[in-house]
Image 1 (cartoon, one colour):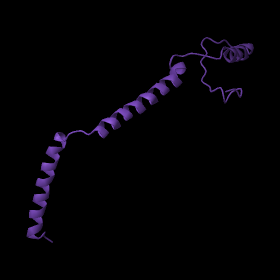
Image 2 (image 1 turned 135 degrees about the horizontal axis):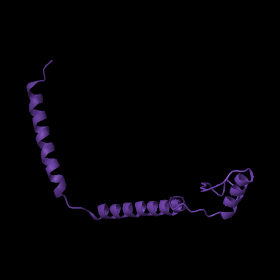
Image 3 (image 1 turned 135 degrees about the vertical axis):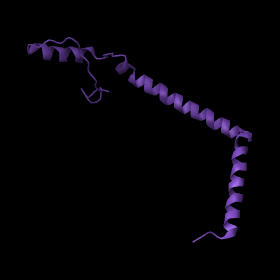
Image 4 (image 1 turned 90 degrees about the vertical axis):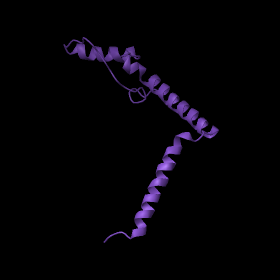
Length: 100
């Protein structure tokens, strides 16, 4: 079934209107609300990024903050006749030992 003759004209006019609207998008002035929303977005992302870096720095820098736990693990392994050359442990204090 073919489209009616008037439908093609309407479609062509709609396409022209869309082209005019899309060419004017870049020329519209920015409002203060757009700027404020952008600044708030930057602050939210910066806060999230800083928190992520703070929470993962010990893992990424290969730090071991609980020396006593590392030594206990090392002694358990070495008491069975094995040797420990390099000990890396990933844990959360609230899950191991019940301390926060």
